[in-house]
Amino acid sequence: MRILSIVGARPQFVKLGPIARAFRERSDIDHVIVHTGQHYDPLLSDVFFSDLGIGKPHVHLGVGSGSHGEQTGAILSALDSVLSEYAPDWVLVYGDTNSTLAGAVAAVKLHLPLAHLEAGLRSFNRRMPEEHNRVLTDHAADLLLAPTQVAMQHLKDEGLSSRARLVGDVMTDVCFATRDAVANQNPTLPEGVLGDYVVATIHRADNTDDPDRLSAIIEALAVLSVPVVLLTHPRLRAKASAFGIPLTQGSIRPTDSLAYPQMLRTVQCAAGVVTDSGGLQKEAFLLQTPCTTIRTETEWVETLADGWNVLDPTLALVREAAARPRPTAKQAMPYGEGKAAELVAQTLVQEGR
Ligand code: UD1
Image 1 (cartoon, rainbow, N blue to C red):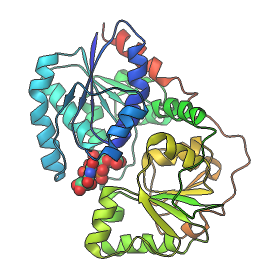
Image 2 (cartoon, helix red, strand yellow):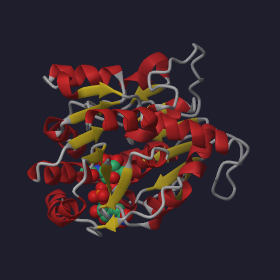
Image 3 (cartoon, rainbow, N blue to C red):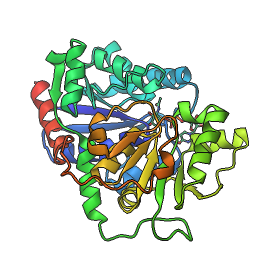
């Protein structure tokens, strides 16, 4: 059976890691990887392929940046000939980016069976491009591979139960395996950072694209009582520079994005995380580091149990990000034990017959 994965942005490369490994271990799967080129900076792309042992993509579309319409349209039109050439038994799309939606539309237009990994997540915030992408992809797909019970319920509420399968969360697979592999390493910290520190990332359009909002977030981070290791996404750097907002302020130590293994170790050793990333909220939860999320809602609602993660759209809690104690109750395992990718492979083979 031939399965063609379409990926393009950083979180998708992380999910592809355990999937590529699980597919490699089966003689009945021929796996083709298509990289759309949505993320092209080596730190956002190449390092994930090498660190997670994925190997080179078979096809690179090289679409690069643009408005949502331009980017989605460019991927869609470039995919036609690729999908026709490889004629896969399944097209597999991941998560909620513009690459996901373009891959989904390209597949259904060519009548190719479409599977969506990480189906059923919802923020119910229609301002987020990711929300349109995931809702539209779920409704287009033939097979919905859901990570959690909550995701299964969302799919049921939308009349999609018959196509939904609970497979668990592949990000947990790669998170646990990598955590164990780097358990003896030191965290990767900017020079001069010793003792307690907070890891921060900000990249959502709602937080970066309005100068007042971005300025308020940077000021809230600057007054923390411990160093704030701010991992700067290209969008954050571009917007801060365009608005004349210096990132080196107070406690903030801006630094480049980290490769995945170093990122996990640095988060695991941190006193707290402040973020607007979906994936990082969950990684903080899995690594048992308290997280403060600068958003009004989260798709990963399980992380809120016992206070491991708190939503802080008004920036009232950021100041305490390093001081919040780790919850003491035994943590539940809503994201599985780290074996989801094998089940994804098995489900695709069974359902593809
Ligand atoms: C995308 C995803 C988001 C995901 C995030 C992870 C969509 C709608 N959003 O957001 O869900 O959480 O990736 O990072 O697909 N840029 C570079 N180099 C790159 C990539 C981007 O400089 O390698 C710059 C460009 O100026 C670009 C901007 O960053 O316009 C935003 O990049 P884009 O891929 O459009 O969205 P992200 O904000 O990364």
